[in-house]
Length: 414
Image (tube, rainbow, N blue to C red; front, side, top):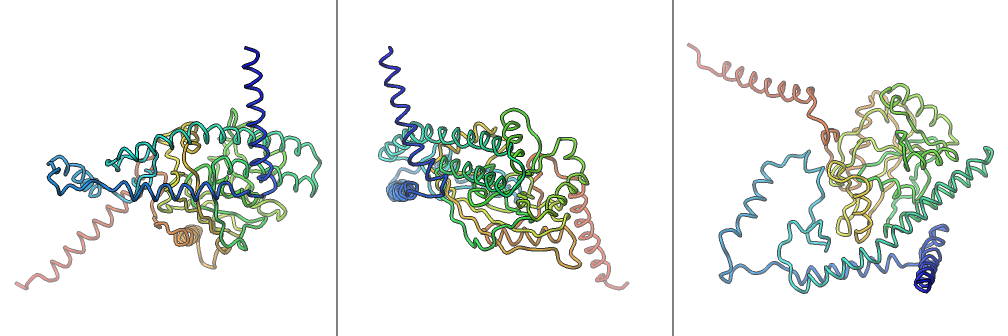
């Protein structure tokens, strides 16, 4: 029995040495050894071969039965009743299956060869990648909590700020490696500056990891309990993040004042805000809440576009809790995305907060190749507001009145 424990301990030491030496240390210095790039290239080649060899069977040889048409009838009816809003809260449809069980609903023709490839993929994702990613996540979060707590003990100085930035960015880089993240940053000359506000479209909690992998931000959010609360309290000791109590979140004026005070200090990190207020499936950008655009300051828009071929980054909070969502992310092939820094924007003369928010939203949607929608993302959890219903009723009423007037004016004289 003791021999078994000794072997297990040696294996654990070897495993930890490989993880620290080949992943954690390079991540701390922002260096890539190229393993992720090689992995992505192999993955792309594998999916391409799978796609060439997994075309649907030919139904022209007498194999057709009436039930084969039911699937297409079902999809046709779904397209008829589909609206612009609800489809933004479901996973993006794929052009071809990416060998993940969770995405094979629309791909029915699976050959024996493809089944073998899928089984090999399950082994790689759950037996190799998942333990590796969990190890990296534990190391990254431990580094964040311990590092920020120690830095928080230092007196305020430029050295403290530098160490805080180093701890934060190192943590996010380790966590990004833990997701096999491949991120392409564009237009780095437009990166958010201190005293500004960074706004981005929102797909997933890992948006923060993607953004903070290339720079440090002051986070804005509600105070939590449990493990999340421990992380928040340690972070705020070393960096002026803006955490609100639940009672404060309902007071818009108190929130606005805290944010104004933050951006007024040009030595503080830029604030990171997701104005949609909820996660959207990365096919569109929905209505931006105007609060972020009322407090003044320079807005630095950022567009994020994920590649769903390697893994669906969208968090459907109505369907998956945080633990199950993170498990899905850690058992995906990889996270591949593009991120564009847009030129800074300020509020123009005569422009109100809503118009400014819409202008920023349109710029992000255009750059990311996303659909620009005016609907409120809050409809994911709430019923349609009465104001929306009244607007549609007024529009319909004006149409009826217009038709009646036209009919009356065009009626023949008696």
